[in-house]
Image (cartoon, rainbow, N blue to C red; front, side):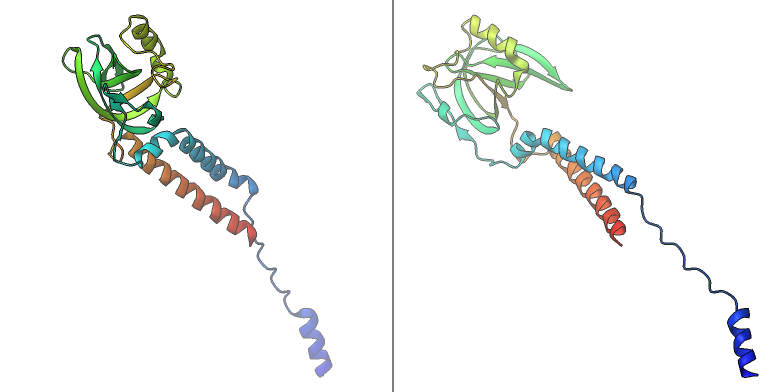
Length: 207
């Protein structure tokens, strides 16, 4: 009798339910966060000069003046202090919503980029701002040639102590809020979001 009951339990017992299938995330699902991360890194690389200047020293480097220039200190992305004489002619342009003008220094190969105001007058000027070489910022190449041909901008060369014409964006200071700071916050959020998304998907794939 016991043997019969044992056979009934063995052959008539309900079959065990199969274990639920474990779903694994598709590797193609990693493509979106990878592309997002790559785009964030690309934008960071493109904006790196602006981000680097944003966190640079707030102490301006003195490039000298008519009594003695120190253009050996000049480099792109430098917060610089310049004291010199500017010409009376200016070239005006618009950048976004900002109205600005380019005024040449007559005794040094520096072009002053400043907010547009009263008509430009020849005379001494003291300015501080972000310094860039014409090679890094080629937008003003035609303006530079024009001022040099009219002898209103000192040409670069051995006598000037530099091989570049420099553009000083007056009033652009490090560690001040503006679009570079906004870019930094946006890129940091994008990098964190896409990095965390990709990390979670890779962790799920490894289970």
